[in-house]
Length: 435
Image 1 (cartoon, rainbow, N blue to C red):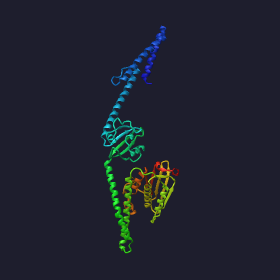
Image 2: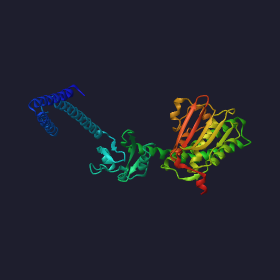
Image 3: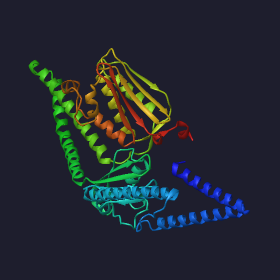
Image 4: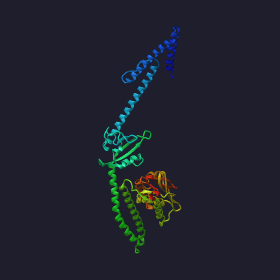
């Protein structure tokens, strides 16, 4: 208890004792004590009423001038109120500044509550998402923006690649959605960006690549046919045999690049999620292993560990392309005295396919760019090996269509491990298939 409170209590006790003593001398001690307590009660009631009146009208009236404990309480309350007003004004200024800044942003911003209800949005978001001020506040945004990719992205809490979507009212525009969640409050900030120009350029690039690949396939087939005939012609001059063999190798490499371009263009054109057909992962990996080990050139031994009989829900052709690319790369860059291990297992996080090798490894600075088109760690070595630089790009796109991700771990000179992680929703236990 503070000193003023003790003084106030001592003052009350002193008044009652003095009144009791005076009353004792006159023979009415109890009466005088009661009168003293009544006066004290009236004084404190008066101060309480003044204090309550000031609390109700503190915005327009100064605090009352009171002594003792009531004066101390009034002073403390007045300081707290002034501090509250200061912080409130500061927060309002920051909020106004934030709203001015977000209104001037070229991107849309929507503030969502824990249940995805709209708390606030800026002008760009209202225009693009067709939101109305005040009328749409408190309404769940997925009830207003009807797009399966958008709703699926929200359901995953933003833990996925930001989708690029089109809205029914704006068929000529593309928007990129990004969700940021505040873990402490559960509120979310939805960023909407107009990426129409980028989408059109990307579409033009995809169309160009697909058309170029289709146009190149036919002449390459003709060239390869003539080269095969020349190579098998017994009358061919020995001087030309080695150049012809080299031309055959390069034409086969070009055919491989064209085939990979067509495969990549097909994956990009399909978009969305892959089909959900049951795929026997163990059987598929066994066939891939048999294919790479039956090649005539010497290669490292390939070991296969199937630790689950579960299946994957997806596209068999796309999964085969992804796994075959990973195994082919591992064998290609692993010396004959090394080894390649393929593993399939299922745990609480989902299904996993890993391809581990003891090959040349990859420097750490190259790992973030490995899945880019035509990116090579060692361009000269890749060309000698016959690589197109598109294999890991195909793997990445195929996995994205299966809600999966590719994890790459490598140490230069010691080997690499490529692991495909599939969500539990894509894993189908064998018992479910039998049922």
